[in-house]
Image 1 (cartoon, rainbow, N blue to C red):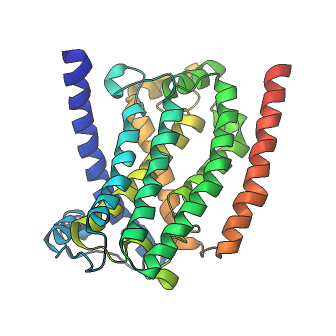
Image 2: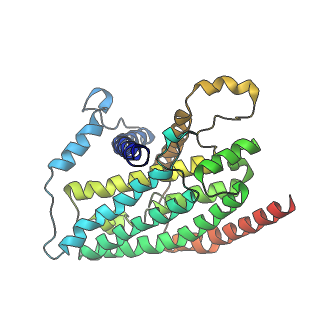
Image 3: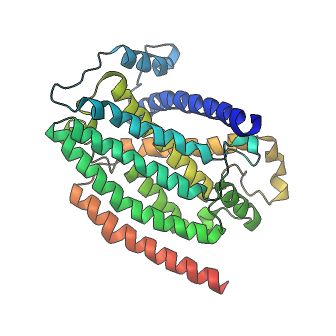
Amino acid sequence: MVETIIVPLLKAAVLINAILVAVTFLVLMERKVIAWAQSRLGPMRAGPYGILQALADPIKLILKEDITPAKADKYVFTLAPIISLVPALVAFAVIPFGPDSLYYISDINVGLLFIISVTSIGVYGIILAGWASNSKYPLISSLRASAQLISYEIAVTMTLVSVILTAGTLSLVGIVEAQLESGLWFGFVQPVAFALVFIGGLAETNRVPFDLPEAETELTGGFHTEYSGMRFSLFFLAEYANIIVISAVVAIMFLGGWLRPFPNVEALSFLDVVPSWIWLIGKIFVFLYVFIWLRATLPRYRYDQLMSLGWKLFIPIAIGNLVLTAIAKVAF
């Protein structure tokens, strides 16, 4: 009972708290990086160099009035942000931060399929939020989000199949071990898949240049236009938790997860003194920085460009990459 129930629950509690704390500081990091990109300083008043802004923002959201529009569907309106947040947190159950069972809650043999399935549920929260708000801007936003997810989910899933063929397993621990055995990160073996999964991750998390569901200039914030207070913050938590999930999956699939650089090179064995979980968190941090850097750099796509890119470019490339991978697997 201790090993099967109590230990996993303790791990889950620690991990969820760590993710929520990480999200608050990720928001601060985003504000700082975008400020630096625009030759500004960003938040500077709360604590030294604005470091306590990460605590001030959640307190502000908790204290704000939580308003439900008069004509909204009150129950669905409240349920929607929860549906968005819970799958993002559940996905962390199978993400391994190290080779031992101490560093993950569960290692199931269909771990990657579990993540794809669970994170796909989050879009229902966006759709329900748009519908339950009884407002035209959130409704348009929710329709955009559903179409965008379908378009890019197909390309990302088909691309991940090529990585599964390369590794020979759906287990995330097994995929990292396959990279250790081959002596190469799959980012070098599958560079096209690497690019497609990362770009598709941008689209699935509604980040620039694919932030059409939010689109402040067109839809005044999109699906969370009518939200305030804690329910608004749940949507924010869900978005940033999903960004961390995507970054973790890309790091595990293509950059060796918790492995140090060139793990089979004896000359670099001195790097083994760094704990495995620090290597993975460092790789995740790099991807988080790229997410923010792209927001500060790129303009937003038009909606027809977004759809054309997904259906006419990414899906054919994903199919071609899968076919070539299958041929190479059989031939070699």
